[in-house]
Image 1 (cartoon, protein in one colour):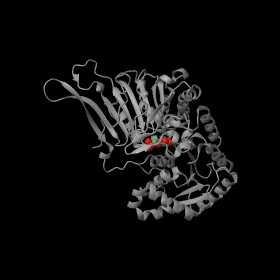
Image 2: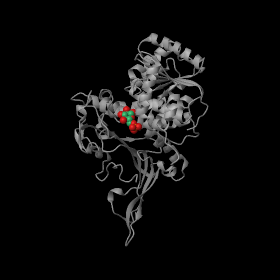
Image 3: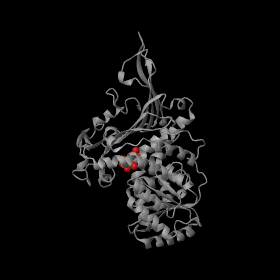
Image 4: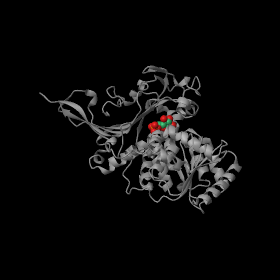
Length: 505
Ligand code: BG6
């Protein structure tokens, strides 16, 4: 990462005592500090509802770092103290207007004491229902005005709960902040390997010419997770896999996989192209939902030596919950490049592996001269592995040595870890730094968020209103409901089992 035009600034984290701040944000800021990427004069202000002073908050931050940035701390113990000197705390109850007046005074005092210009990033690491409240309170006290330094807000997902609520939230945020000040974070876009999809496609002469309907048969996008919902049952009940993973992360990945090359590589040009993909997704009508989308929910199952509980037994989950913990769907992008090429997207919790990957299945050669050993592997594949063992692999057929012409699929893989001297940055490091620099390329623009809600909304509505659409149950530790294979409409085609080909050894 480059330290580009980074101005002195203050980062205010609302929800500074919460899980996200402790697990992701503070470790990311610490890493930026270790990499000397933070501006010379810089302060983090934790804004939380708990009454505590700077000393107590610094102790909390130290503890969070030792838990969630253990390696960085053990390798750089001597620098933790210097980092903590940049950490401050102000009690703010997000729903109490006057607290924002006090926050303003605090920021003014801090900025003059530390001689930091009032360039401020406000990070909304708070429950979504508070986004508009905090934004309005900031506006009320002029904490959004840019006469004394720029102001930016970072808004976490979910951005809205539906198409209408997303528009409503957007309007409310624009009531005081213009689009250039609003950074809608989607941490998938911060992943090095997602950005590498653009480089793979647009740098290499041998990928781009075949990246279209003429040569590609279908594309699979999988994000499987080994964990269940854990202690997030309450949140997950209002979200489900569709809102939690598909509406944002996976549709953004789809957009990057399917976009046209931008004329120039800047924020607007890139985002102009990704939004076109989302706008071109063929809507799934209410009466088509059962044919195009399969939803599932995990039930108790044996995973290794342990019996995992079912979703309905998780804390905060209703005993008769119909929330989906697995979704698989088939999508078409109605444009010139992709006409009639199906994109299959799947995500789920309590699956056997944690894998995120995009698999491009190429059409077979026009005429089969050689006998394949394995009929299910007729296609060549390009595998873009986002997690784990990040990299790119291609699968193709080779002659098995010996008599005759028998063909077997082989695999050539590039592993990011082979770029040994480069550490892959965490998504939050990259995204925080981008916002601090004022680069919104990897943040979701309002039109993209709206387009993806527009696609997802009718499916959610159909699930809600039509009890005939099945919710399939799958045992924890399996690859989700087998019904998800019916989306392919061909008994010989199934979801690729990740790890089949892309091995780490
Ligand atoms: C989050 C979701 O946005 O992304 C979680 O809320 C999910 O439910 C997580 O586990 C997955 O992110 P990653 O980076 O671990 O693939």
